[in-house]
Length: 430
Ligand SMILES: Cc1ncc(COP(=O)(O)O)c(C=O)c1O
Figure 1: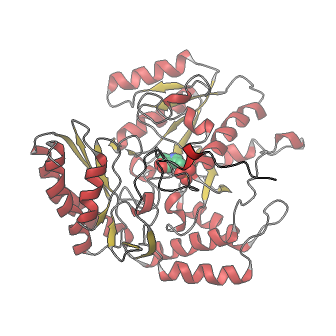
Figure 2: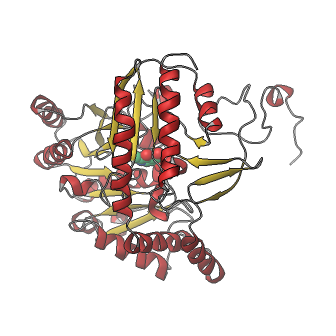
Figure 3: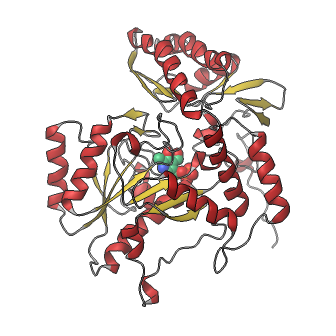
């Protein structure tokens, strides 16, 4: 096709003529940092600087970057079969991974539908929930109850269950399906409000969807396991499904392999992603209980789940995920998370007394500091880079979610930089 002449406005004011970056105003974009390699807890830049990755590259690299064991497993798989379609064919890496997830997860969560990103895993969960009811002869159950500060992804259905006020999807209000937003039930009154919301919508709600223990992208808001239990009880009482989104919290981040373990609950549908492959490559899973799965078993073809991403259950990604699970079995990851939690608490909780800091929250290998006023994020990020730390705050929340394998000095480099930089930034003096 003949190329139209370039619009000079498109090239003006952006340092990247051909790339479109996430969540970024491209106009006037300053040249971004350029990553050349990753190793262990570090991102190595093209200019040779080494930054400790304080956010595990969007919370994926739980064993550190480019873990040799995962890389070797992927190389072996790459030689045999980098990819094969999953429609009509299955393969050992996916079968093994699904069986291992079934062993790790509680109750009858043992039917894994693989996809290629967290947002798609949420789309699949929502589709499963709606079709569960259709297959049971109930067509009107298309609504979801979701929570303030929740975030479930950037695709349209996932956006609809993300907090429209606080989340980044307010622009699309009016286009997205309207869902019922609720406050987390933090006390008796909250529990009653949630029950009332479910009663008002009787026969219309397909499922309640929640991020367990830490609402991550919504600002690292944390809640007690009892809150999660209250949500599970309310969903049960109302006779609706419970979808738990463990895409960010799964695989050790909150101190247990899955956050649901701390509440002793078993949802009907569970979403996994991010650290599933140890940060090597994208893979996600939507795992359903026997009860959900059997609702799709029928002589009628149309009762089947009509979904199938081209690269679903990619063998290379499944090999990486199996290797990551081997590492969880062989190495003391949860002990490492507990040690990180102790360090974060000792180092960061005192920042709660600093002027301009409104809250410090710690859970497992998550440490978040919320400040009252939003100041320049560019200067904040630059100050951390100067300190040798890669960190990406959300507005007024500065947080770390480091790899579990980082060394004590690497962890101290992150928290020392936070202790030094946050007070100056919170004061507006950076
Ligand atoms: C809880 C949660 N759900 C879903 C998603 C979307 O995952 P992905 O970015 O892989 O589409 C995210 C991403 O941050 C998340 O934190």
